[in-house]
Length: 446
Image 1: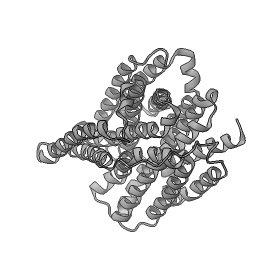
Image 2: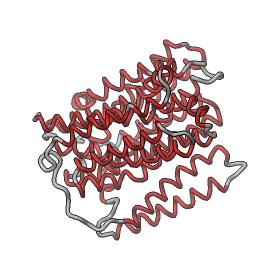
Image 3: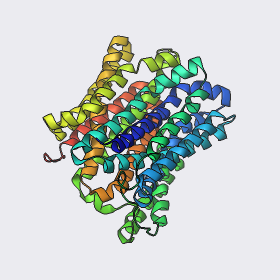
Image 4: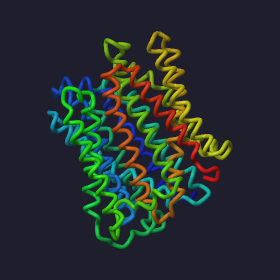
């Protein structure tokens, strides 16, 4: 590995560690933020989902930005915006400022995530490509998993604002590492200017936002059916129009030919189910663990409970390529998704009186299950495309995973309203079983 390649890889990994941790650290801090900023119930929910929705809506554009302007430049812009959004949140004195900062962070992540993935993908040599993508994914997932512990620790000892102030030096360090690399040899040449597909973009945003709003309204469907039916109708119409527009566009925002490739579709589906599971688990476990009806833990204690999950995520995400090479990609994916379902049952038993030891075992198994498919899904999807399509392909991959996480948050709210945290675990178990079934369609040669 050359010095420039190493600089791209570790700068991107550092950035993804910060982005991943930021995505979940806020969950442990929300009770304190709610009291200090006078957040409404909707404000608490959208403090998490505004980030995910904006990320999902704009991330395909972020992938195209990497193709058009070069992955290095797009990565630097995205990371700079993320730092600015963090400053807005850290200085917030009202709900509106918090949500604005979270939305800007979502936009920044939409640019930075696919751009850094494309930078890693195009800078690595062929024999190191899978390991480099695995490292990128591993650091992102590690950030997801340790976020509640980091958030709980900082909230307990220094206050929740430090969570977001701390993003600034990390972003500056990652930007410095990327700025030292050659924009052509390390990241590929920027593509020629093409007319932007703004109609496709508007339809894609409409589809994603309408779908999430419909899912958020599901718990109140009996009393107020229109907020559910209306957005679902809008989402269906947007999908229909998007398919028609993108088949005729000269330079489509979403290249529908990608979806004719089985490996790409399987990577999307399994990656989305993994994000669906991890986001719903981290959010609703934190809320349950810190409630009187749950374990009654502090934010710090609730975050510490997730340490086995963090350990398994890091170990398995980094070794996932070797595992896939040993037992086959299909078997690795199927086994990982099956572990998610098994771990959900173990965690459920612990909340029913099984104790903290059983909870730790459940979280370790869950981390192992989540790490393998989530680490391998981007590799599976991108391996079905040419390197010249890496930016757009990674944008679509990450759009679906962010949307999966947003659906997990929204679906978890409905499950929580129906049956409490055990119902959330049942929902996650079903996602794992669906993922295991889909894995059977992965080609042996993938």
